[in-house]
Structures are given as C-alpha cells and as structure tokens.
Image (cartoon, rainbow, N blue to C red; front, side, top):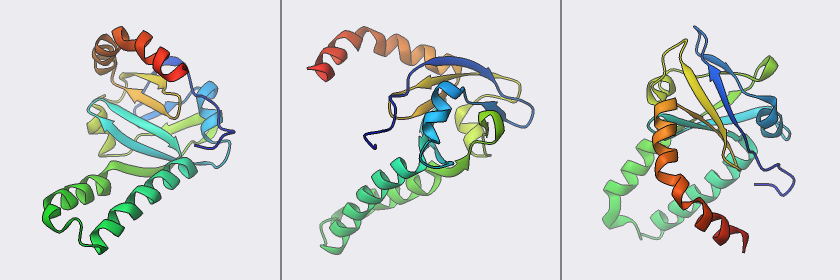
Amino acid sequence: MSSTQEFLLGEFQRSLDERYRLSIPSEVGDALVAESPDCILAKERPGCLSLWSAPVWQARLDEGVELVKQKMRAGKLRERIAEVQLFGRLLSTRHRLVQLAGRGRLVIPEGFREFLGVESGGEVQIVGAAVCVEIWKPAAWLKYLEGQMPRFRRLFDRLSK
C-alpha cells in the first residue's frame, strides 16, 4: 500500500440493482481510484468480496507469486505439488480487474455474484477495511462482526503500540 493512500473506513448499506450494479460510496471509492481507475475485485470468504486499488493489489500479488516461482525453480515445492495446484486453482478464480463507472458504480461479475450470495435487488453492506473496501452479504457481515468485535480492544492496543 502506498504511503499516500488513505485509510478506508466506514459502513454503508446499498442495494444491488437488476444488473448486479451497486454504487460504492465516494467516501471510500474515491480513495480507491486515486492512483488508477483500475480496481481488483477479489473473493475473500463466502458472503464477502473485497475491492482493491489495482496497483496496490498487483504489487502484493506479483511479489508473492514470484516467491512461489522461486521456490518451485529451486525444487523446494517438489513434495508439495498438490498445494501448488490448489494455489493455482484458487488464484485463477479469486480476482478480476474491474473499474468503477460513473457515480462509483461497480458491476459484480458472474462467478462473484454466487460467491457473494446476494440476488439482484438485495441489500449489501459496504465496509471500509483500512486497506480495501469489502462488500458483504448482510447476514455474513453480522456473523463476522459478532465473532470479531469482542477482540477489537486487544487488536487496537496491539496495532497502535
């Protein structure tokens, strides 16, 4: 993440229209596209997609993939071929390049719609997750929050020291 990119925070409720479009609030969307109009939409966990600045995502991805390739060339993953195949499969389907259209509109592509689990006309929660924007199925967001919120104080203390 570049040092000039903003800390993305906020929680917003939005609806998907009949074409699976949703409006990303300018409070978080403008910061995502400040460096480039390109974004990466990624499958995070069932009921959750994340939206990243493409330059930020690509830098992290390239670095990680290059490390895996180096290990493969050095023969360090020879006994872990099933894990390498799983990594390749998940990487192949995990993310897609997207752009925010006018008024911050994002079209959720096929394959990502099913993973999110929200039908057209349904509600979603848009959440600033500091380094990216997340799009949640409301029931999945509530369940996640219920499990994580009790840990907030310790997390805050650990990260802010």
